[in-house]
Amino acid sequence: MLNRSFIAALLALSAAHAHAIQTVEYGWEDGRGTILGGFGNLVDASNVTGAQTGSTGSGSYGVPGAHSGDRFLHVAEAPHSGTPQAYLAMVGGLVSGDVVTASFFGYDLSAGGSPSLRIWAHYADSADIASYLGSAGGNDAFTDGSGWSEVGHQWTFDNAAADALVIEARLYSSPATDATARSDYWIDSLRVSAPDTAHIATAAAVPEPRGYAMLLAGLGMIGLTAARRSRR
Ligand SMILES: [Ca+2]
Ligand SMILES: [Ca+2]
Image (tube, rainbow, N blue to C red):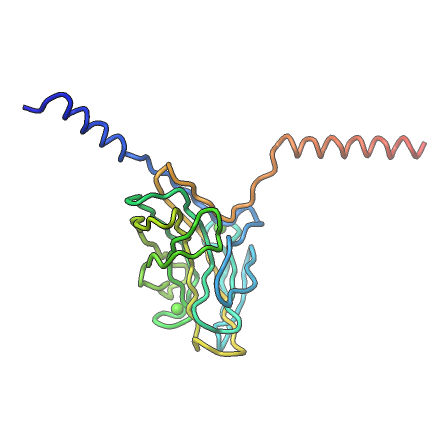
């Protein structure tokens, strides 16, 4: 027979480990956000809408538009060198055993060859997006070349020296190194899940508080009134 203190201890233990899961989705729909940071020859991060054309490294290709909504992310590798990384999200406040899941869609028309994207992550200090405390690995699968395709991975946090995971889109261009080549990439529909004790940051633009917008509108009205008065 189980004694009461043992049952109480079990309940306390299960409560301590039963974190609710939060999910953040970001599809670049604010029209302003891009990335949190990057590594390597990552250039021209921009928030775009509508059909886009770019370079495959040796030719050109285009994307008809966003995977979700109207807006999406563009980045490029120029010139080709190593494996550039676009930092799409940072999950801070993590402790050992926390599970983080992330995915995004990348646009790819070259099945089985570059340009292609993968999802990866590294450990970091949540106070500094530029900190690097080792690779956390990722999914070996590339975007599949069918147009918009999803890449995703799940990590179990296990680095006592770090408290954050930075979610990366890794760019794979061909040739891997070329002093004059450029490759363009498009990304959309980012999704990140983590325990609700963690903090998930994306490049989402912080909306202007409603009160601030109303204050600005009010000042505009006062300015207009003053202008009308001064003309009299
Ligand atoms: Ca979108
Ligand atoms: Ca490809």
